[in-house]
Length: 99
Image (cartoon, rainbow, N blue to C red; front, side, top):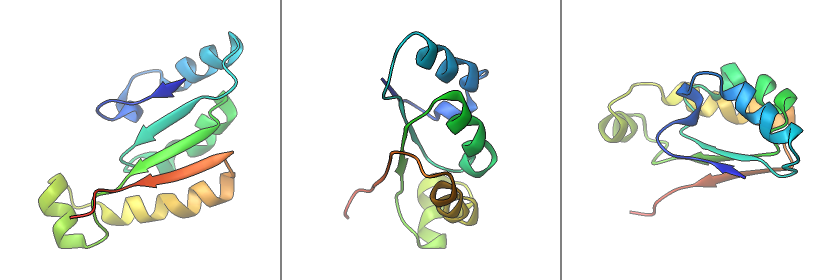
C-alpha cells in the first residue's frame, strides 16, 4: 500500500490510517512525503506499522529550495534524514528530478 498525494503527513489521523492498514493485513505500507514534518512524526509512523518512506526532494540548495517550494525549511528536511536513519525503516528512498 502506498500513501501519496499532496503531503500525507498533514492528513488528520494519518497514524490511525497506517495502523488500520497494518491491522487488516497490509504487510508493506509506504509513504511519500516532502519530509518537512517527518522528524516530528517518524516514530509514530514506525510504531503504527509504516515500513517504507520515500522523500521527494527538489534540491539541497537553500535558495532554490525556497524558490521551488515557497518554504524556508530545508533544515527540517535535512534533519529528517537523521531521524529516518535512527528509526530504520525496511527501505528509505529519495526521489529527485534532475534538472
